[in-house]
Length: 204
Ligand SMILES: N[C@@H](CCC(=O)N[C@@H](CS)C(=O)NCC(=O)O)C(=O)O
Image (spheres, rainbow, N blue to C red):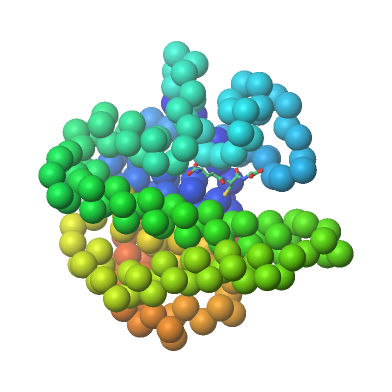
């Protein structure tokens, strides 16, 4: 299998952490891909995904699986179901938490694109502030509902560590550690896992 990825991508990091935790990383070749808003990549759009987003998992028979959650779901099924509860209330809790974290990561990425990619004269600061508020409200929610911070590893916890790592990477001065001490302790604990420390985004 091949995984399109960038070391900067929080979504690709989520898949990499899951693959390591599931013991499947050796079956996956990481293939760097270059995709960004306003930079058409025709071959990626044609061969991998019309959405031109990474990560994508390309199976040995050529089938392409997209969206980081769907990729983790696929790997988790192959590994016997360790990161996504199979049924019951826990399943819907973990999936809902993951969906919130996915939206928070999207919101941070949109801030990054608006500030770092969009021409300065077109910057819409109120829109950036609104997206940032969604991510920040999400962090507040998890600080105040800390059940996620202590249970056995699942996909929502992996998504949480990825959104915190992305905040460090792109918004180093945002002050999340001071504002959310429980999330800080969770992040430190998660860093003890090789899957998490080995997949950290590059500095700065
Ligand atoms: N819902 C997607 C989001 C993936 C995503 O937004 N990836 C970013 C990189 S971190 C991307 O490919 N951006 C390129 C673009 O939007 O043009 C997933 O979970 O896989």
